[in-house]
Image 1 (cartoon, rainbow, N blue to C red):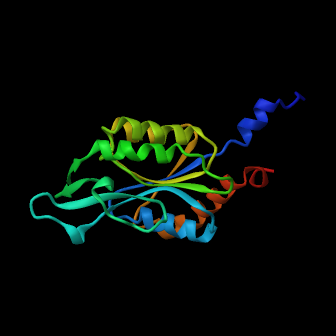
Image 2: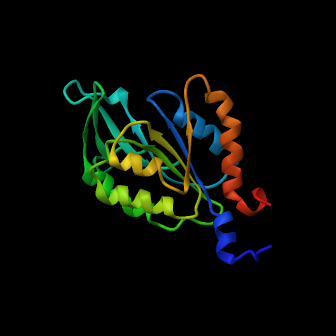
Image 3: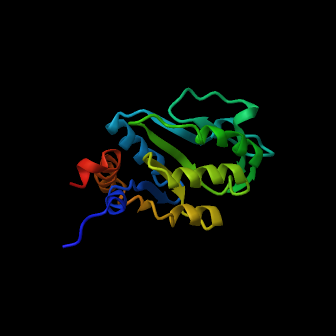
Length: 194
């Protein structure tokens, strides 16, 4: 029997990040909210929200990026673009200005929320780089990810430290306990993998 090396133990205990992948309006954010409420842990990261109630006839609905689980304050500084008829006009520089927040250390016991990763940020190099760096780390992440094909989204979904859960209207209720159990193990890997 060969001796277990430290590098083997580290690999065994490596945190796997949780990606909820699906189409628009299928319940990605709702599922994530249920999981985070059940965990009752400090939440960091971001949420983007399309504000249909503020839609402009010419440009469409504004989309804002907010600090995760904080009061949502809309300013020109966190307006990442507009969406109209499934087409978008994105402000890559606003995403990039948010990137340093994603690089701040997260206290032990916290979880990072990325809700959601889509195509609007595809041209925001600093933001995309910050997300990929987070995926390299060991602070557990739960992310809503659009099921679209862009180089950034492909890199996220195929990341070796990420597990994709594909959500549909048919499976979203049964997915909840599976995702919750998986995330709990990531928050305490030693306990879940003994």
